[in-house]
Length: 489
Image (cartoon, rainbow, N blue to C red; front, side):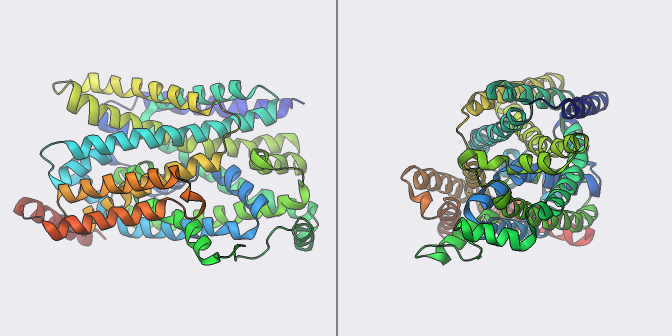
């Protein structure tokens, strides 16, 4: 049944997003403004934007659904992500902020090319192809989440729900670019953490407290232990916690580091981000556990609506509308980022470098906005299958970026001697291993990011053993960025 209080809440939320897009439309004048916000994000915007764009709809839909079906052992996903978050902020963020500014890079592919001085452009083009491929899949997962949300709330057709959600996201991303996306993420990140904390705390009483949850898990034979069932629990833990490896290669998160105002701000943002992640992941797991006695009928893809069902069960419609807007916030905060990064790859790494080298800044600015629409339409097409699961789509795309880019980013920031050939070999190897591993069904044994990540590193180390970087300009540039980071911290 349609609830008009929830509809009004959502309309007001949409109006807010459109207003934000129009506001920054007037303050976005260059390609760097549109894609990186002029590198002037403050500590709060950097932190909450990075984490809100990271967690996406799977935080409130996919992760609780996995815990609802699999039990407490699924929380290794959250543990791995927490470790990965901390490592990413401490290891990658400061150096990437300095190095991308010194190489005048506003996309990850352009950074790879400038950092390793690839004379052929192959490294940049291939990394742009990877970005577009995996982000299209990633964005489709968010649109699946939008479909689940609107279908559940407004009893409308799933495909129509996907189209409505996609249209709203495209419009304000198209208008305001990076600044609109990041400032909306600031509000969305705050709303997400409040919602995911408050909802399970209130719902726990309806579930009969901790004892009621434990009894329901025992009755349904759902694991209450961190040790996964099966003959190889250690392998299962490694596979699940390996989600944390993906952080080093996520372009939409790394873009926030690149757009930060200073390295000093990144240090402050790190504390904010880690606190946000601890609260968000802990209570997202709690939503899944508390949902076991409340919604025993949920199974399959429907399990990913447990947060939605919980909100509607325990809150007044007006309050529920606000809290359910948090689900939309989680979905939008990631899709808008993915659309923007994909747009930057199309404009900066294809259009300007391959198709029209003499393009004007104004033309490039226009192409960037058109690219948002094109990529969104493709993602909408992929999201039209109502049987798709959010966690499954996110898992593949997340693993793809981690296996393809993670080791290359780390070597770019911490290895003086890595050459562009070694970086390209690692990227190719990691991507191929991940795709093949999943295609032959080995993903059921071990999450494909693990072999892909290891293979990428192995290829880079092998390449460096054969030939090391000898270019004095590259070596001097590496030393300069290390000194600059130390000076700013």
